[in-house]
Length: 189
Image (cartoon, rainbow, N blue to C red; front, side, top):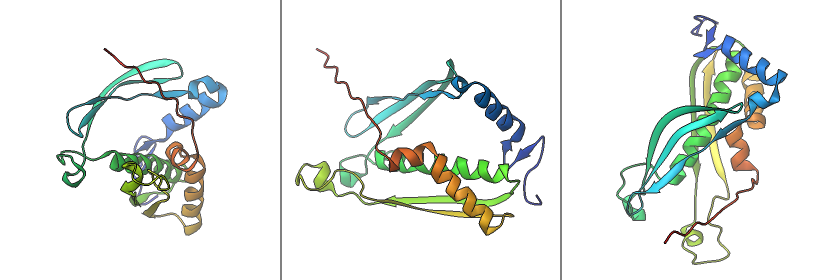
């Protein structure tokens, strides 16, 4: 592990003892592995919104955290171009989730990473979003991403990690498989 930052059982910034503790705790009590996230978004005028994260639940325990994320559209899509748009956040969420998988997968194999980048792109047809053509879907037909990874592992090690990430990443699953979305409209007067 010549390249890895190995301090207090850390590999690539991952606390290996803490990772082992989480794996063991969830293996012994599956309820400890239930994680619930939530985000509340409020309109901020025009195409802008602000998303707020106040907490999440892990193993039945609510854990406070406080973050806000601003969302806007580019000028050409009627926005003020003050923040990333929803599509860019979707890709950011995919990239960040799979990146955790690559980092943790490499750490578990004792592979020190020098570089890890994920670049995702996709093309939408606005005719679907604008309702101009019922035969045009409003979402992506394909998202493509490239992972650039460098470290002291073998090609086979990196291939194994890649396959594991595609099999276990929550957001890879979320964008590649149908999931149920339950929508409720609450009209206020």
